[in-house]
Amino acid sequence: MSIETVAKKSKVLAQAIRQLREALEETQEGMARRLGCTLSGYIQWEKGRRVPGGVWVLKMMALAPDSWSRRLFQEQVLAGSPQPASPAPRTRPVARSASTTPDQRRRAKSVALEAIEILFELGEAGFRPADQKLKTLADSLNRIAGDFSRASGLKT
Image 1 (cartoon, rainbow, N blue to C red):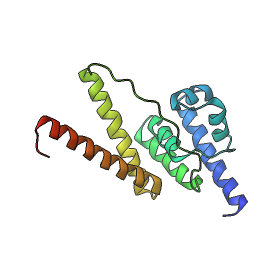
Image 2: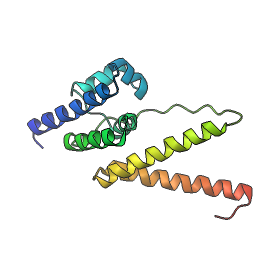
Image 3: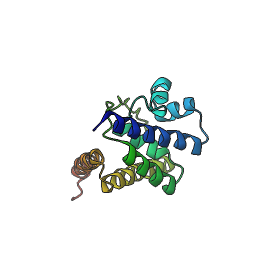
């Protein structure tokens, strides 16, 4: 791929990132906070100086205000992304509470299903890292479900 092609694709991706921020009526600082990245890193993505990795792109898609906006962002990302190169972000351990309320459980389910849908849509569009993440997620969920069913005496 030529340098000109990479530069053009980077600009398309940067424009998609900026349009998403504007659709959310968010500042650059607010987007960085919502994504959990540094402000300088976010600005580099929005200006097309760096390309966000696949995990960051998925986080951005999850912020899209509706399915139409998410689909538009996805199409722009696929048009503008040669192959995201940034390393995956470090994740922080999730603090565990003694109990989970029904509302927290419903919210967690909603977030998980939305993430699965995003990964599926990206995979359908040919974004190979999303296919790999979806398979890894499915394998992990099957292991976890198996652990719980054995612990509770249920059959899987």
